[in-house]
Every structure is written in structure tokens, then in C-alpha cells.
Length: 99
Image (tube, rainbow, N blue to C red; front, side, top):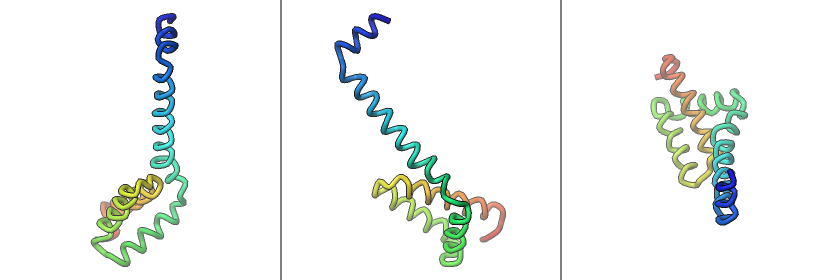
């Protein structure tokens, strides 16, 4: 244990960078995976219904384009939101609720 403490005393930047990288990873998980889960299901369903009504069979393609746009602009929350929309579209397609 003393060897590890001596190493960190000799190289103080390593723990700092480790904490920074861990913080960014936690933020990304929150913004991409967890925060979109708080969007009400009714809101997701409304977006899905609108996409199906407007684009028909191309609804999933349009949702993917929006997710890709969010990825390109580094908006992880919107990317997670559109990912939920696409999952609902896939669920409805598999259940044959729309073609």
C-alpha cells in the first residue's frame, strides 16, 4: 500500500486525470442514458405518432436522422431522446402496429 501512495505522491497528475475522466464518463451516462428516461412516455408516443403520420414507412429513417444530427452537434440528451423514439418505433413495427 505504501508503494501505491508513494507513486501517487510522485505523480500527482494521474489521480487528477483519473477523476476528470471518471467525471466525464458519469456525466455522459447521466445525459445519454438516464436523463432521457425521465421524458414522459406520453411525450415519446406523441412524437412517434407524429412521425408515423408525417412520414409513414420512413418514420424510423427520420428519427435516425434526428439522432445523427444530435450526435454531430454533441447533444447527448437529444441523442438519447431520439434513441427512445426509435426504440418505440421498432417496438410498434415488431408488433405490426404500423407498416
